[in-house]
Amino acid sequence: MYRNLFFAFSTAALFAAPTAAQAPDPGRIAAQQQAMGPLAKFDGIWRGPAWTQLPGGRHEVTQTERIGPFLGGSVKVLEGRGYNADGTVGFNAFGIISFDPSTGRYTLHSYALGRSGDFPLEVTPTGYVWRVPAGPDAVIRYTATVDGNHWREIGERIVGTTQPMQMFEMNLTRVGDTQWPAKDPVPMR
Image (cartoon, rainbow, N blue to C red; front, top):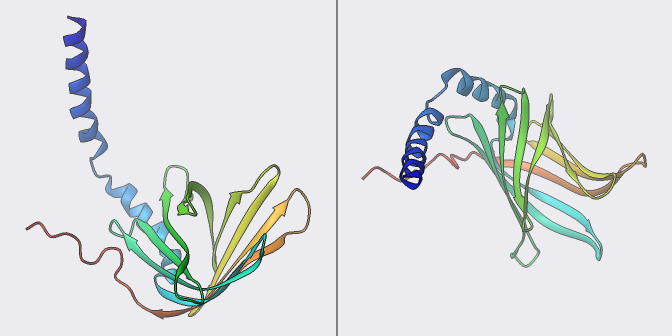
């Protein structure tokens, strides 16, 4: 009897929860779309030089980024690729920027280098800032600015109260528009 009762409750919960969870909230979606507005300056295809300071020395790549709105403009999707001099991909990253109207906060969910995480993102008048924990009392702070068709982003390692040490920089030029990721969905038939 307990087994059948458990099965009945589990089945009811399985079917009831998605219905409530999937009900659209137009006000929430509108707030998310509005929050993505200041990030529209990043939409498009970008390319330019980038470097990272690694333990073995400075590593230079040609960095590309493609960024676009998704889910009706309620989130921003990003893909970055760093091409080595021989044309191979030396770095690849994927991210999603979202906004939670209930907290008023942005989050960057990032995948790169075999790792993933959710990181607070602060939108600024010229771009954004986000931080990645980097050990005891240490953080890597990324600061991005867009001025017209130029996107500059730097990464600095900050340990305690010491001066930030730059360990990354990219200087990209906007080279075009993109309909990615919303274009070409799988059709119904």
